[in-house]
Image 1 (cartoon, rainbow, N blue to C red):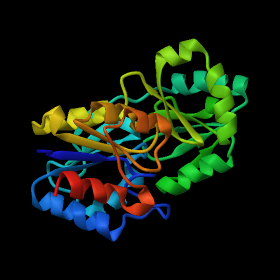
Image 2: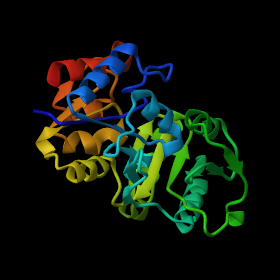
Image 3: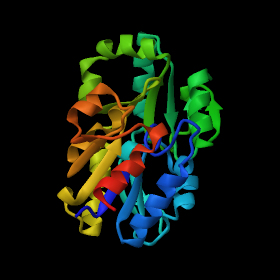
Length: 266
């Protein structure tokens, strides 16, 4: 019996209008009535996911959320931090140097904002999705006490495709690198991914690995799909995700999450 389901947000639980369908909402309510835990696991910061947490009522004392692709795991009601692995300002500075060498746009996420040396359309997308402000300015002027959670190369999908093979080997060894969307390539602490984030919550709740379902669509979901007792790829998932998944459901426009819940949990 499955006791926990971890859901990616964009491209998975959310449709293309960034909404949770009525069917998915109703099924999640049924899960909660059965005592099954529902965990949102996202690349977004907490500010970018809380409206969905509230919409689904995931606000009990033992409800947790995986944010920043696993860099921060905390309680939605208690704010208890189970896992916290940010980067540093020095990381942002050295990755900025790499971004200039590769000719790609860059920004960093803090606890409450997006920092960018140069505003661009992709940073605006990040800001809008998460409803957090963009702060533009030289990296040298950033307050040393600023908490840098993750750094992102953001650009045209073809540009990212072209530069990825040229990322220096030392960068690949030092950071956890995830492709969360066609326009987003993320750099996180080496010990961070969604699989770690979900496992921390499962351990906290006394839930075994084989009692966990994880559902996702993109590269940043790979680790949690591999971790899960049942790893599920959305119908709209990348080929990489579909290849490692135990099951492929319908797309996010076809209530793929609801289909998984009804098939395996209800």
